[in-house]
Length: 325
Ligand code: SF4
Image (cartoon, rainbow, N blue to C red; front, side, top):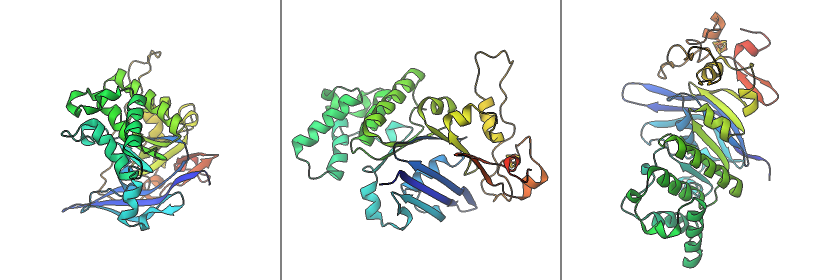
């Protein structure tokens, strides 16, 4: 068994609406190893959630389209697989946690029944007693007394609901967990508890995690590696310490880091990134960040930058190429 779990190569995804084509992912590439915790960071609209939906082949049917590229999971090309194969993969080998727990929980079913449903679907051969024992165990692991499994979602707080969603996502012991802003809807103390819980469960099951977030603090706390996403592309990738402990960054990453409040600094204010993300309906010729980049040159506007690697740390920018900007 090799170490590579997920390999995404030059993935292009479009949303085709009545009046325009939205270029959501553009030559997006990413590798995830077994057991790795990787953070996908970037602003809203950068393409992070589209990536998760593409991996699961859950893009909105009529408008979302993968136009080219490859998604290999354990060396199998997912884009060639029939829907029946994906049904066996989703929730069993790859699970997803959404930002709002209410989108994942059915308000008219008890939470215990909802967790049990995952087992009924993916482990039909287990006996009733074995399934009940597994449900009780996962409730205990996520910090909810098993007696409460007969209650309905509305009887739980937001943080507790997210714990139940995590229980549903992990009961089948998936190899990969996609967590889309799992703590954003929660208040700060509950956020910390949920991250701690995800860390503990990740250790127990050794699942790889793709954590989608706009919060660099959460990434620094939880992840091994970071992929910074802008305009539907990975613009920088590397280990957490390479991204945060380095002056050698993509200009967009530098901008994101400058937006983090530093309580020890006497600097009078934060420096938000000037301008707005480009219109995703326009196909970019050169660098997708050129309109906002303080270092942009004429070349940046017309020529796509290469991904320049130093070890495993990659930066998509002319500044770091041999030829320069
Ligand atoms: Fe800035 Fe040019 Fe680098 Fe793009 S390629 S980030 S515009 S310097």
